[in-house]
Length: 127
Image (cartoon, rainbow, N blue to C red; front, top):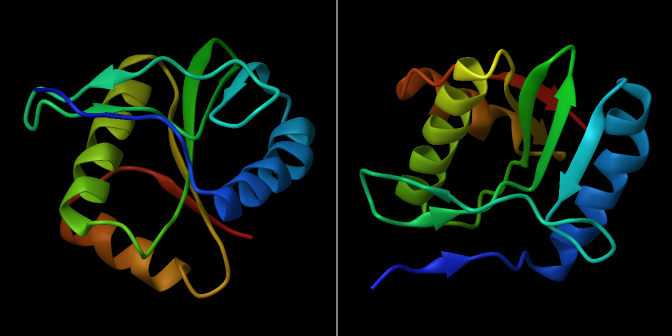
């Protein structure tokens, strides 16, 4: 049985809106999709390793590259977070884009530690 995780928690909605209003709108991104009400939901992606389906927080195009933008959350399962970031980083790289992790206050070190430990290529942005 495959699990589909598409609905973010409500506090994430606010963070995602904040990212869309600032970072994404000023960054020259197009074809923006976001996992919140009022936006087209990004396509669910299958992770071959875990059989989970993951839905990115935000996807967008910039200079013909596909970018995945994720809110860093300390409260999730670390293994699941790592596999999602690895998948999005790999897919982004394959599509001339990449993974951008948006780290709310107090989450930056957590994101940095995980990405270094698991060799996940991404850009971490403090917010």
